[in-house]
Each structure stands twice: as structure tokens, then as C-alpha cells.
Length: 352
Image 1 (cartoon, rainbow, N blue to C red):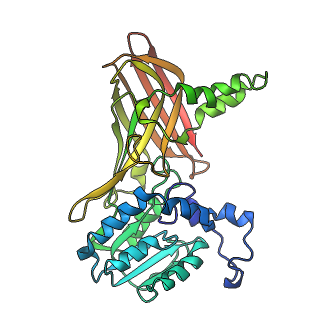
Image 2: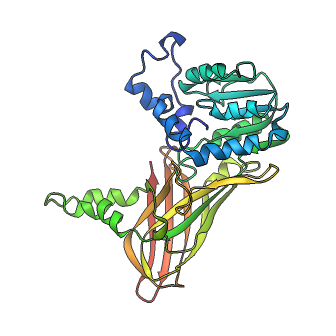
């Protein structure tokens, strides 16, 4: 949630509990960080400095103080407590923040220093295991999104909290997310990342090229490299969706906007707060302002020569890996019958 923008969100759910409150800071080892990467301040720094992310939440809350006035709010994966404090600022009667990372020890001090100790209660533990002192809450706020929207995201946990605690007619912040796919030209980076293995100091290391091709890359895509339109491949209504909806298969049809070469597909997402006076959201698209989620790039084995107006069709499917459900298995069936290139193939990836 708030403590886990992109990156190892799930770690919050599996973090070891600290043995006593005395060893709060003295004793953190790399093993603790491995199991509980959200206890590391650097991750929170990156997310708080992500202005697009943090300011959108701030505006969604503070510009809708009338929705928070006197209400009970739950912050799922509260991290440093920043979202909880926005809600308290907006006039919430009480905010409950849950996180199972060690960061919650600092969050308590932060909340107290900023004068919200009587309005915000932080609870350390897994959302699935903790008890709240109330039966229902009016609003659930969470920053749950992962890379490729769903990778190690906390959405499952948010849905659990929704089903258990959200009052009828309650609000979810945010309540909508959409993921998109487009085609990109990326010759230079593909050469540096993939073809690199063909000749490494004179040695053939192509077995590693095979692995590199199956691993999506999270990086910034230059907006000028996008050569097709974008198609929605997943539409999430956080008020109504179920955990099962997050394993999806979607068709796509991408139309080239110029003559170019396709080296990869690129996925990005948008999030929106629509249950408010004036809907507000943000995008992680290549043509939008930078966010720490960047974009997710899927390199193809074969470069396609595409002409303006030609279309790549296919389906993309995504589901948790059966052996390790933190990993996502992503498959694309891609068909293209162009003037200069033809392809009909299945591409398989694993986000881990």
C-alpha cells in the first residue's frame, strides 16, 4: 500500500514480526531487509518523492474533505503514514493504518510528531490477521499498485479488507485502474540488453540471452519510441472486482502510426479516483510525467518491419505462477501479416 509503491509489496504481507520493540533499529540485518524490504527508508523516499503518485493522493483526499469529514478510514499498507495523515487533515473522525513492515514503528513517531496521535491508530500485522476495533469503515485508501500494475501488488489484500470492513456504499481510494499495451521501437536498448549475450568478451553466452528474453524489463520508455496506438488490456473496478479477475486474458489490436520497427511491447497503467466531486487520476504512460513504476517492456525475439496503418493482433494473458504466486506468468499470442514481415507466435514471460 502506501508503503509499497512498486516493488516487493508482498513482502509486507510476509514480514517477520520483530521480537520486541526494544530492538527496533539496533538490530536490522540484511536478512530482515530481504524479508521486509519496506523497513528500508530508501523505498519510502523513492515513493514519497514520486510527486505524481503522492500529490494525486493528496489532492484526491484534501479536495474532497466533505467525503472524509467525520468518517472512519482504513489505510491498507500505510507505510510512513502519509496517506493516513492526509485523511486526518481532511477531517476524518479516525484513521486506522495497517502495515506489517517494521516501518510502522517510525510511522507511529511521525504521526505523533505531526499532532495526529489521537486521530490515527497504527496496527502492526497482516491485514488478513489483525482485528480492528470497529466493525466497518466508510473509506478504504491504499497505494497498492505494483510494476505492471499487479506484480507483487497489494490488491489481493485491499480486496480482502474491502470485503471484510467496507460499509455498504463505502468509498475506495482509488477505485479504478486500467492497464494498456502498445508497440515500441527500442533497437538500442534491445541491442544493449539482449544481443549483448551473443558476444561477451569474445565468448558466446546465448543461453543467458534466452533467459533475458523471457524476463520483462521495468524501465523508462521514451515517448518517441511508441509507434502504435494503446489498447486497454485490463480494467479493474476496485469496488466490485474479485481476486480471480486479476488472472486475465485480453485480446489486443495495435495499429502502427508510422513506418517503423517493432522490438518490444510496452505495458503501463492509469489509476483514478472517480467517487469524488471531480474525478482525478494519474498515468504511468511513456508520454506522462515520470513515476517510480516506469513502464514494463516485453522484448520480442524477432524484429517486425511495420508500415503505417498495419495492425498487430493477439491476446495477452497473465496469471500468478503456480509454484511461486508472487511471480506473474505472462503470455502473448501475436499475429502479424504485414507487407515486409509476417509472424504468428507465442511469447512467454515471467515477471519475478
